[in-house]
Amino acid sequence: MKLSLLDPLVVPRGSTSGGALRTAVAMAQQAERLGFTRYWIVEHHDVAFEANPAPEVFAAALAGATSRIRIGVGGVLLNHYSPYKVAEALRTLNALYPGRIDVGIGRATAGPLADRALQRLREAELPDDHAEHVEELIGWLGNDLPASSPFHGIGIMRDEPPGPLPWILAVSEESARRAGRLGLGLACSAFHKPDQAPHAMAAYREAFRPSAYAAGLPAPQSFIAVRIVLGETLEEAERLAMPVRAVFRQRRKPERIMVERLPTLDEAVAIMGGMVAAGNEDWPAFLVGTADSVRARLRRMADITGVGEFMIQDFLDDPALRLRNYELLARAFDLGGAG
Image (cartoon, rainbow, N blue to C red; front, side, top):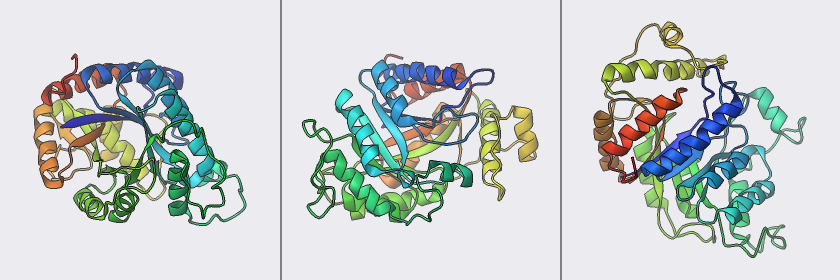
């Protein structure tokens, strides 16, 4: 089984955004050493304790500091941007680091004010043209926009091979089917609606067709993204999981409370109304436990879905603790790195 990492670039307590970026560079190097397959970074806006507003920029630093691990612009929120400009940035990364760049294509709200700030036309109501923009972006990545496109006559670095490799970020069966019909990779999120992951994976495989686009795939390729908190004991894992549980409890309230920093354990316990046990659901929002118990549960998820790769997000703000946990995972799954 392959393991990959999704880094939210949490700013450690007492550090800065610049410090978090430099920590991520070092962490990507360690992930490569340990045998992880990918190191993706997400796109979030106006999150005070995350240093990740421009993953297409930071990906260049990560790729330049590593040599083998695939680097992912793990969420281009295409609903906010011109597909042409996004493709220009991604094609530039692909030319610099051929065969090592992934792009996850998604859509999300950053909050009413941030959404408006990201818009070019701030007083206009924009149409829901996400599906069309996805296909346009894929066409730019391979310089094979259809003849019917008004932009068919222009290209981006036509002397470079197609790429980077595009993935659809999906929670629902509908998004998974779109990835399959287009012949793209599926990055299935088990964050928001974990129990939908098996259905999304099945829908993707059923819908998959070899891509008509040069940047697409001839055969299905997928992974499932999960939030995992490890400890050397179950009790430690449960304690470490409390701050991230509290963060998402606050974010999902109707008033969408965005905390200024990752809570301490005591603050998290107060927000949650007490300690929360790890639980043993088949598809949990947070998979909490030791490396051995996590391995067993991921293997069970793999048996259900047929997936051969999981992407892990841990949401810890202690770099030393994160590295320890990656080493535990690398050993538990025998990743074959130099750990």
